[in-house]
Length: 259
Image (cartoon, rainbow, N blue to C red; front, top):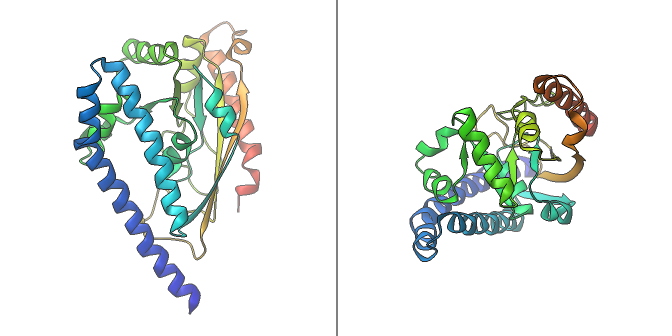
């Protein structure tokens, strides 16, 4: 009986957390972010300030979900991630909370995001104000935006799976992030995200919550030196080799997550 009541409580708390997230994003987009854009005349500096506010809000949001007892969150290697500059930061993508987890750990991020977010009622103001990079730009324009972020000392956050991981399966990575890293000569920082019991997955309704509280754990993992992956005759072969090795790394890191 207590476990059933606890599950219903978590369903309600999850709904509240989703509402706070959406409402908070909308309020920031119509209040704080326009104020920053007005006060800071230089557009790129204003966008960087907006991204810092997003970082702080995400930290506050994680404090909130911990405070109400909805989730536990731990981070290993926060200082390492905060010290990185000009890297492609990649992470596996098991849950809806992954972007919040990674961006709360460091303020030094630029993001590649789905173009659909520019049409999302709650988030379009956020992604525009932050100057995030759309994933539907043409190749030259996309690489130019990434190189500009690296030159400014920002890290580029990419989820190479493109969508959330299917529970029980290992991440399958697209080669786009490897091509970016090789073309821009940017190292790759791997981040491993684990959630037990799994929650907020890609398929299924948001209210399908586990019986016990989920524990999110973020680990800042290995750094991949891209200069070591320029031995093959073509960039495509180098990228394929790099992705194959990183997939093997994630399979090993996540082997204890499989049912």
